[in-house]
Image 1: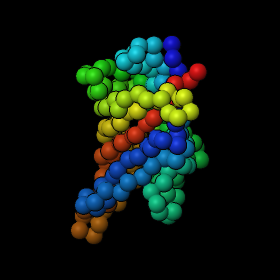
Image 2 (image 1 turned 120 degrees about the vertical axis):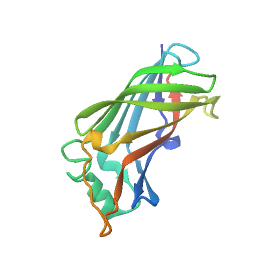
Image 3 (image 1 turned 90 degrees about the horizontal axis):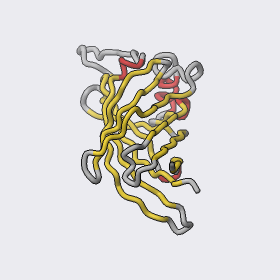
Image 4 (image 1 turned 60 degrees about the vertical axis):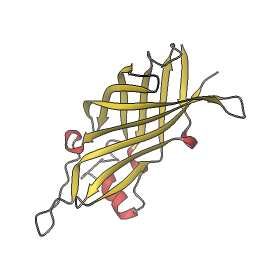
Length: 175
């Protein structure tokens, strides 16, 4: 069994949410950790766990980030982390996988399905074996208790319920 740890310096955990239903706001988590265990060379038996610090949310706007950390959204003081634990990692083609697992936000756990594109494996100049993955999917924020909402004067929605997830991840094989 090989263990892989996330290379945080070469990984990004981002999301997009529609604002006023006309543009997307991009955010990220800056403090996170992930582990993958796999015996098969093609990762088909991989078990993956991920955790992010909710207070590390960043949308390049201090006021909005503060609102996202509040009780209206992530309640970061009460729920300092969000987590994902895989239930299956299914190989579809040489580069495509389907990742199923349980996502927990604000103490609410729901199953999610993510599409994974395997970017390949390479050895860096320091002899570390690294594997790259691009992961995408969608969740409904209401399912996880992120229920704050507002409408414009014209009755339009300020923040969409659908959240697009996009992760670029480099995993380092542990010696």
